[in-house]
Each structure stands twice: as structure tokens, then as C-alpha cells.
Length: 268
Image 1 (cartoon, rainbow, N blue to C red):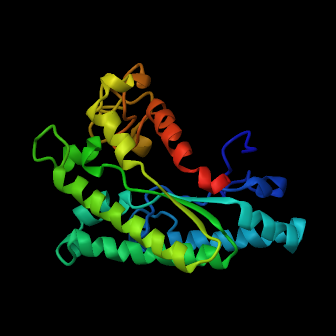
Image 2: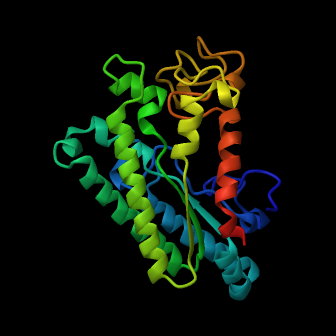
């Protein structure tokens, strides 16, 4: 696809000059569809990310001219991955949300944000957009530790919430495609490929799918999780999860194969 490295973060020093022309990354850890999720963790909200995207477009236009820039915007692939933080790091632990909204109602709120996001990108010239589903959130090591009531099994109600959300994501995406001419919108299913790694680790070349490699393997993430953390495993390739929330590099390699197969429409 023409990359020799990861696209630079938009707010980094690397995102300048010709580096702007091969794509940049607007993502922010712990952000989500729900802007207040981002506020809780001082992340860059999805709304602000769209504003940064507009800034980036203006910089590209100034470098290559409007005609070439518009070709880049319409031909470029835009990827969105959100939702897990909205549920795990906000809804499930926030009584101001979970006592007011059912999971189904909260999903509807997130769907409005998703729909607005896609329509905003479309209005800015984007025509190729990929969005990932929620993973089996009830099987993440941190989720089992926090919400599993002492069990070592996936939290069924959380997985069901994820399935319901993913169904809405698919139907909303179909509606968007039907009303936005020329839009290529692909929903990447992460739920089922990751669930397969979790439920059948040995069949997929892994030793452990409940505990993560890092630290205690049950809860850590972000700065709490690194090679020097007490308890961190010596061979992460045997683990489905690197930390309490994120798959290991080896698991991501397997997931990437599945996602690439699903995404041919974006590059055709």
C-alpha cells in the first residue's frame, strides 16, 4: 500500500512536510464515539479529531493543489476503531450512564455519533472508510477481572452487548451506504476472529488466552505495561493478549490476515 512505516501521529513532530502526503494518524488512546469518554481520560475526542482532519486537508491542499488533494482524499483509506473504551472504561463503571441508559440505549447514542462522523468525512471528500466492530469485550482479561464476579470465564452479558452493538453498526453502515452515493464503507469484523483465538488458543498456536503477558496479566494497560513490569512473560508470542485490553503482536498478525481479506472493497 506504499507505506514504509506507520503513519505519523498528526500532533507529532514527524507529521510535517511530505510526510503529510502519505497519511497521518488522528487516533487517541481511550477516546471513543462518546466525547465524554475522551474527556474522562484527557484523550482527543472524535469531534476534535475531525477538526484536525480538516486542518490536515488544508495543509495538503497548500502543498499539492486542490485537484490533486481531492483525488488523495477520495482515494485514501480512512480507518475508524472505537467503542471499547465507551463501554469498558465509561459505561460499565459510570452510574451516571448505566443507571440512566440500558446498554441498548447507550449503543443508540454511539450509533448517532458514528453516523455523524461518517457523514462529516463524506462531506470532506472521503469515499473509502473502514470501521471495526467491537471485540468480544467480555473476554478481555481486564473485563473478566473487573466484571467477572470471581469467575475465570468470559462475561456473557458484555459479549452480548458487543454483539448487539455490532449488529447496529452493520445496519447503520448499510443505511449510510444507501444514502451516500459512491461511498465504500466496510465493517471489519474483529469479534469473531478474536473470539476464535480466545476460545481455541492451542489450535491457533497460543498457550494462554485468559491472562495477558504483561504484569499480573489481569488488569494492566498503557504505562503500567512494559517489559520491565513485574511478572511480565518472557515470550509474548505464546499469549493472545499483551495487556489487559489489547491483543499481542502475534495475535494482531493473525487478526490482520482476517481483516485484509475483509477489506478488499476498500482498495479495489
